[in-house]
Image (cartoon, rainbow, N blue to C red; front, side, top):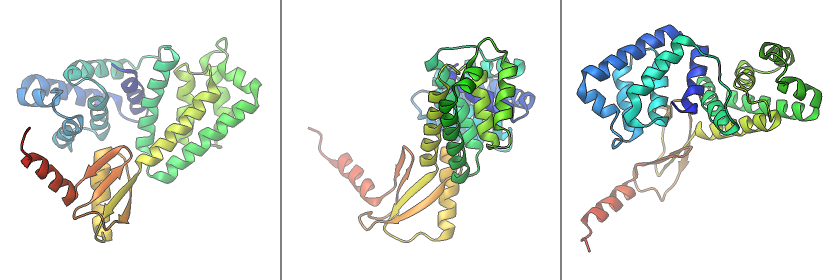
Length: 286
């Protein structure tokens, strides 16, 4: 199982019923064994991950906990398609045992922390909360940079983790939001204290990336009313698995339909694109 999923799983387990998620995962694992069509769909690398995630969400909606659906959707996104059953088995084992974080290198540790942060960001209600996290972690990076004694205490491997977490709690409790405090705790728990300033600066950059993923730009030649905007926000939110803010740009060059950009996701539903595809399909082969 990749470090990304390991970090994401750790964040899910902190704020959810881990035993309930295990029961959901066991039911999904059994369904993969019993139903060949389901297994072939969810494990076929030829089917885009987004399609497989959509199938999963539609099948499990109202049948499994939202946290379970989110966890499986993330697994489909970051793990190899053909290994889904193995990954589910590992998730069941980890959620059942709640193992301590093992020490890994800087690169693997950053990947694990990215997965953890991804879940934290998903749980935030909107762009304003993302901005607050970005401000908090950036300010904490500056404090650590200016106070080498504090930085050394938090990074001291001779001090028990519980003692270092206590120092962190005393320093940040009541001064930053709960999501930032969770991120800071996980930095220490996952053993990423060798470069605390750089790590918190990196987390601030992740929050900035998240802000971009929350904004959906919709280019359309016609006006989009409030009800259509709300429906778009709901549909796009399901695609990117977080709440989004829809910004509409009137663009006369868009010939019917709309061009939607959400972070690195581009959905071209314009008439012009459909005409270009038709033209390509009808072009004589050389």
